Amino acid sequence: MTIRPLIAGNWKMNGLAASLGEVHALREAQAAPACDVLICPPATLIGAMVAAVQGHPMMVGAQDCHAAESGAHTGDLSAEMIADAGGSAVIVGHSERRADHGEDDAAVKAKAEAALRAGLIAIVCIGETEEERDAGRALDVVLGQLAASLPAGATAENTVIAYEPVWAIGTGRVPEIADIAQMHDALRDDLKDRLSDGASVRLLYGGSMKPGNAAEILAVENVNGGLIGGASLKAADFGAIIAAA
Ligand code: PGA
View (tube, helix red, strand yellow):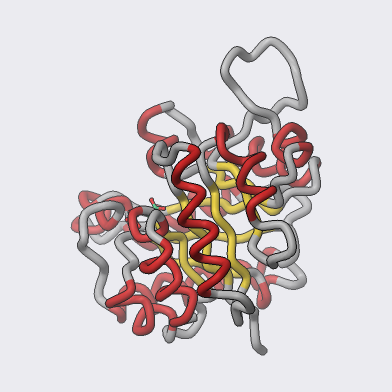
């Protein structure tokens, strides 16, 4: 089965209005990408980025959402607001949210279900810490996170899983290719058991993916794209990863 890869950029807390120049450069350089492309800028730039990608297949998303549709939640954004701003997707359960904001699997699941409710693609992040990997628990931890954060109603159309080893994020370190393959194979088997179309759910790898290692990682069976932080901020780097896909 061929799954159309997704290359997703997570700008994290980076980017001002001037950074939209990178999006203009990217659409020039990648006029007809052979994969799906998504950028998740900070919320302040979602509307402007939606305008900047008009007429190009690139999608825009958010980095988090609240589980509720609206209400007294100062500083939060609902999935409906993201959709209303023209967003197509939202990242939920990124390890930085799990660590900095104490989000557990149940909270992540509720956010993912909010995304589906609003018609957004939920990109659910899971991944082990270095301590967990060293203890030989990586598979257990990651499959446990998947079981507890997968939204009800998940399908290959509305849900994407991003495997991001916490120790690889922003560190320049990446797992051995064999370890990535083992984890993605295990996730695939698990998704096939859970969902009728689990064979088609996109499984992204994330954590220090760069132009120099993207082709090798993206060639791994059951790696159907990437979630890219640092290397998504510059059109040249992100474009090179899109080209590798
Ligand atoms: P990185 O971040 O590519 O900068 O390692 C990946 C992520 O956190 O999604």
